[in-house]
Image (cartoon, rainbow, N blue to C red; front, side, top):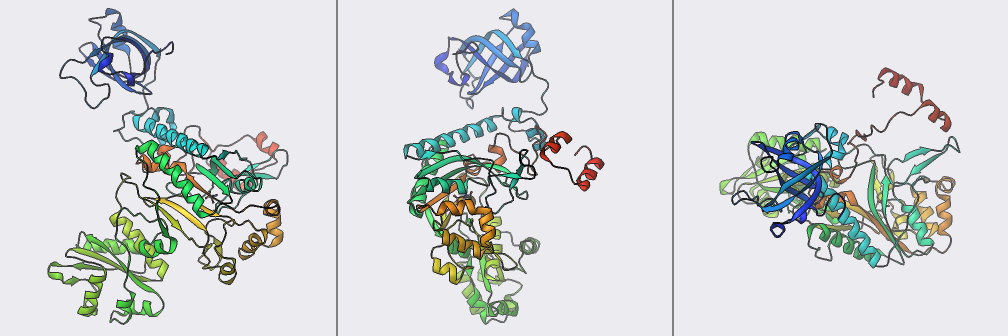
Length: 593
Ligand code: ASP
């Protein structure tokens, strides 16, 4: 195959016995047994056991003694069946071994900063500092491979379906997608900045104006958000758009792509079409716009039962326009301290309080509020909640949205399966056009280019207007979002008006885009989903960093290259930038950071 090898080790099996082969890879484990070294040699395809036996081949004595972990080696030897009883059934090459004739050390390795064994937990900072070693581990190598398969499946699917891959620039004018932009100073125009794209949103819309018809791109996106688990300042999306399209075309296209991507990793396609649920339904029944449907525990409405009850704390919430809702978390621990722990958790989630009920042997309801309720009211509750002996019910009284969100989170706390063995995909449709901020302002629920279902609704009641916007969810993880876009510049201006962006400001920020909409823009719609997210779910990984080749830490650091880093005074001067005196002082006080 090459001057270094004539086979990958993963291609060797019992049929290869008797053959002389040359392999190249790394000494991943070395066991010394009375002068004979048993070495697991790893290459990109797998592992094979090599026996270096100086008693049979005296020239190997030195190498048998001096070989160390992760030395890079080229070995020529004879494949032979392992002696009966020493086969390793866990290893695809476990029926054979290679008896070395020559061993050439291609390069040595320093002692490793951490064990490459998957079973050994290593601090993430150290793993990321030595990511090139971390990626040698089976788990990481499998993740990289899965990612590559997913991307290949996406290209294959969309290319066959007639999509055109188009690159869009990464040094752009800021696009409003709800996050903070990552800015890049311009040297030629001092004081001016490019933004890195939060997504190629407006460029893909321009491509629709340009007549591209169906576009896609595996696009790098940048969002300078506050650090949250499972977010990175840069990440990768499949970005897609089609003209003369509505929601149905987007959903069908994405379903086919995702199914192929899933099949590339999990060997089975998805059952299509995927389930759909409206945003309102998702919020009411699961308290989340990304419900995990692998388990039930749906939210039950109990407002009517409490409306006229003697339990005044709840009755008054209902009278004031609020709700009482509950979930049945099933048979669970019923000790007082455990139940009090759930109350604390509910408060931490923003609930004003929580009431628990336990269905005792004999059907009796144990609860701090049982004495305030009539037997018929208790019976209505247990029936509504389908409660059986031993079940624990959690009740919350609050404004509708708050109650559902707290219960939605408690539902996850108590019911969510660990990992992603099974996949439950779901479309959530009919999102609102706007989210209402705590101070009553409106912000786009998706982005400001999303079309309302009806312009009349938008005008009459923007805070409740429904958008042609949809999300794809898997196992409670939001994979991606999309929408039908506004293609009429007048409607686009109306949305800006509602958002409080005056025509002059809109002109200054997006004039170039509004101008483009005036040249016969076709109706269009699209979607984008996170490749990192999809691969992490498919690989059953707890966070996206595990499936990114060179991720940053959760606080945005790259410990491998020490980025972000300071730049020289000359570099700053060229850009016409000076550090703020306070920043300089802090840097002088803590020079290492
Ligand atoms: N640009 C959007 C995003 O990145 C996706 C879309 O609307 O197509 O979330």
